[in-house]
Image (cartoon, rainbow, N blue to C red; front, side, top):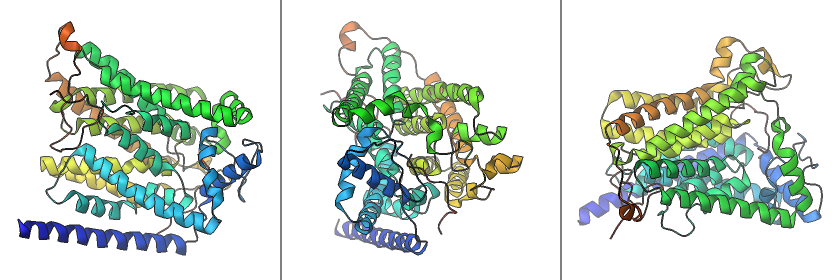
Length: 455
């Protein structure tokens, strides 16, 4: 046992040193590139506006004259940024985001289980050391964005025991900061209804969805009390103006709307995008719910469900900047876990291809920038600049096929009324002591400059 412990300690130490070295190199590279952390400066300006009693949605910040786009609750959370000088704030934000990256990797592995026998801490640190160089993570830290925080809030919530009183609160807070995570509450509600019909018990899902919705409503109420004028402006106008954050066809916009806008060579794709978003939203939610209900028939089913919901949210959002795709980290962890579990070279090749996509910065190899060059992209350039949405569609197709196959082999079961009153356990995502996703309690170099927007 002593030798085993020494080997485990040595593995953790080596991974820790490698992670620190990677983070230090990353920090030096960003400093060498003189990154502005422009979105972080917008957040600070929002906090200053709140403190000064100004008009939050009339504010323009930085040399780029960027507006406020988040719900007013987020601006309240940004007030502490005003207590620091800009230099100290940038340092604190970078360090905080690096810690959040480690947390995101740990939570992703918690969903996917333990794909290797190495100590969990060593695996987390090794994956984080590599993940920091992915384009979405690099750009998130470059702009000083909140994307890692939102992903951590959601995954932390989804890996908590369903019996926990506040299970769902993390999703509600994330939605209060930026609306997109609210789709996870919808996913839980639909999963609850489907589980009730198929298994006779969906209460744990519904309860978590209600907690998420109630928490989100609480953020709206707090903001309305503290910032009544700004809240009225946001919910009656700003929320319905997606072009406020930038041009829809921008290469950085990796949503369906951005792809359609570039394909049509117009900044306003109109009803074509809306129809596509509706289809993608319904299909993506169906895949996520099916993966969750498949239970132990689908290994890592909770992870497939969570990532499918995230991919759906990114596709249907009017604007999904490339740095919003920090969900690439859970994708790569899940695909890598599947490759190790199956021992299949095709899964390993798929994982390598996904890693290459998110670490290649390829989407910036097309005309972009001032002058709305995206409106004149050629067919191959449009395809290259649609890498993330295409990867999301491929992921949803794969997850859907796996989930349907698992459900097809799982007989439907109706339970008695007395039995339905007892919370039915959902099998764990993988052999791992961590509580599975949304389960019931068990019985007895720098990227080329992208148009930044605080979005």
